[in-house]
Image (cartoon, rainbow, N blue to C red; front, top):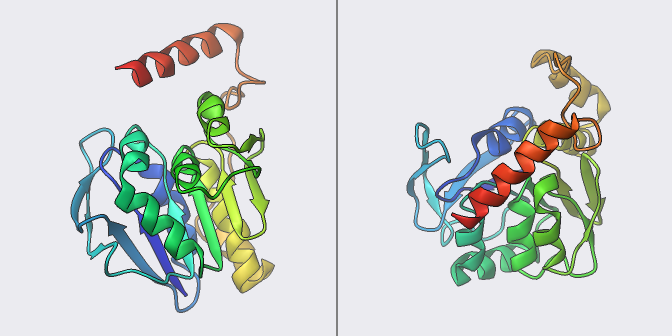
Length: 212
């Protein structure tokens, strides 16, 4: 199974590395990190660089497409080469997936018109602008399109995909192997749970980040 993980400058690392850790355990998985022209791509912290060995011209028919989110999503979504490539490979994928604001790139490629989808909670309005119906779920499946919520939700989606392709026993075995047993010290991982002042703080932060 060929898995194409598309990266662009200013992506969020866990968006892709979380599901990568899960999906790369699929027997016979052929994981390919892809960018527009190949080469080194930096994450949003600028401290992490990933060498993508493939350009979009070299990966034309992946079985699974995964697009992470990050501050660079807007620039990626505006690139006609990215939009055309995503739309083209979607025609033959078994799964077309995104994590966090990666769904905005799917939307820009015209794949989410009238479709239930999710993204980072602070980007629902942007998701809606592409004709999608934002849903506050960890991940949302509509046919072969699966969109996951912010950052850590990509691990949940990865385990679901692993179960679809390799069976639930494999998915549970990998969950145990990576010891994915979330027990966070705080219960503020969603807007519906976070204290009001924390939600206000982060809402302002994301609004300022988008404006800059």
